[in-house]
Image (cartoon, rainbow, N blue to C red; front, side):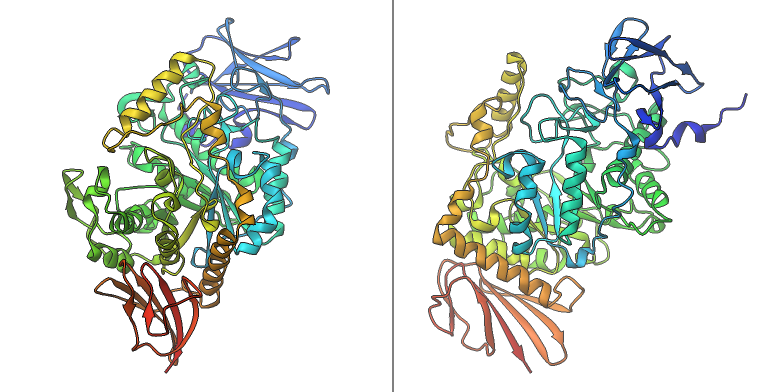
Amino acid sequence: MKPDTLSYRKLSYEDIGLWKNGSELLATVWAPFAKKVEIKIDDQKLMELRRNDYGIWEGSSSFREEYKEYSVILNGRERLPDPASKYLVNGVYGYSTIVDLDFKNNLDTGINIDLKNAVIYELHTGTFSEKGNFAGIKEKLDYLEKLGINVIELMPIAQFEGRRNWGYDGVFPYAVQNSYGSISELIKLVKDVHSRGISIILDVVYNHAGPRGNVLNSFGPYFSDKYKSLWGNATNFDGQWSDYVRNFYIQNAVYWIDFFGFDGLRLDAIHGIYDNSPVHFLKELRADVNKYFENSNKKPILIAESDANNPLTISSIDQCGFGMDAQWCDDFHHSIHSYLTGEGQGYYSDYGHSWQILKAMESGFVYRGEYSMFLKRTRGVRGKQISPSKLIVFSQNHDQVGNRKNSDRNGSYYGKEKSLLFGAICLLSPYVPMIFMGEEFFSKDHFWFFIDTDDATFADIVRKGRNEEFSYFTGNVDIPAPNSYEAFHESQLSWGVLNNNENLEYLRVYQQLIAIRKKYKLGYGVRFETTLIGEILNINYFIDKNSKLLCFFNLSGKSVNINHIKGDVIVSSTDNTLSNSKIEAYGFRVVFCCN
């Protein structure tokens, strides 16, 4: 019999794992090396599955209302949760919860994201609110709406060990983290977000998986020693049996968008996705997501995290690119951060010059084929100008806060003036701005790296690894152990600071900046020019033939004369400006003028 490869590679997410579908239970398990695969329902029923030519085992059974959980038995011995579990009520060491396909969110098509108009807010479910769950996010939606946010980005929520984790150690890509809430609560959150006219995207991790509670390799070669990453063996996207692995993760992307109603995804560290296939995994992912939603009104976006500065990441498939809608732009952050702080350790050693800030403002990427002293090789690609709506910029994000040795925020070492200046540069840039939770009210809370494991040996390995990772930082810092409750608790946002006038005023300026961005449509391709005279960075937006928006950013520690500027000041870094002719140290001013 001639193999039908399409039936192997193109399983829908509705055909992966086990679902209750009407009065039936339908099961599909990939275990190419198993001799026998069975499904055990609660402790009373066994469903024996049949194998096809591609290592896929399938079967069905009638459903009874008392059925709650199931597990997979390999070769009559090993009883494990399903790799495609949708929920694990007792966590990674429990069994899989039976989920009804009728949960599928058919009634809510979501809100298509226009990145030209987007102001993204990155948050971590566990530390964003006092409750630390989906319900806690819902209670803050009034606040986010008033701030002017129109896109929420959730850090990963796929099931990880314990109750506390950044989310990048998830081991069940399809399962909603049980400590955050139920499937129905997540669906309700997405609907509530949409009811405010706000879009919501999800951070997903396809380049690696966590080690604790990981059952994937017990079923098949999900990982390969062909490539190594920071997390060990890389995901098997191009080796033997990789067709199923590729489809497993592609359908995972479709699942989060279709079943829950997310408006798009942010793909973690795509430079850790190793694939030498004729069609790269990311290109196939983009094509399959497009195909799945082609007959609907839904247009999901895909945002990549990459430090390669490769324009092909955000070029269309027709242009031989990966087809991502946008990517994070580290160069923009690093050039400004290094200049304002003088930090030159690690990857910051490639930055620190004022001309790099100008270049970042003009083209996003600073390294476009130049030699990196840190990497000891050329970085980036010389090429055409990139559309600003394809680059996400930020003054803070979970990495740039959490992956510092002290996991401290800008406000703790920049001070108020520099922090507000950096935020203003991002929000008034032509690129897509992203705010990290709490940044907008001058939070000084740490964002420590944290985990929750009962394995003391593993906890100690993580602690030592984090210390070694930041060994290039000078000075001694008292870092809480990642497995301690302290590390998590100190990372929770302190909303009480909004009772302070200083924090409230800071928040009001952020609201003004977001409102200006939207009013003058700064991300919609408005023609702009940038200059750097001394340490004054200037962006001139030509709103129409008769008016301009002039943005001045003082990168120096002293006041600077700008007495030649005429027009109406619509926002500045302080209400107590030195005079109409000066801009204070590390201050900014936005002026609207007519010809």
